[in-house]
Length: 154
Image 1: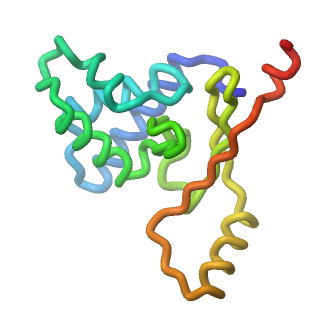
Image 2 (image 1 turned 90 degrees about the vertical axis):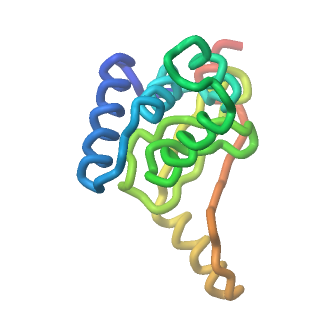
């Protein structure tokens, strides 16, 4: 399901974009934040916070849950990663700060996640919220199913 043809280039691009966003916004992109982001981008599959914690154990960082959660909070707040609520995990954002809301299609067979942005879906959601006089904090739409590749390999 992933559109990535050169994963190393994909990771390098994500890291450079994160550096640029942080530099432009005067944000501290610390070593732990960089490491957590790189771990998330190691594959296009979702990763849980405790799996990230396991990977930083033995590195020069304090391998404690608050360390990872603070880094994840920073990455989320600055649009560099997304939380996949149904899986309680995180994925990198391939186009940070270029969208308001996205939705995700999640293949339950291969665990690939595709981030999809569609202005018309966002417009409908905003219209429903306005009609119901509801102020949202976060919109998370996740669609679970089976991707075409997995369907064809059966």
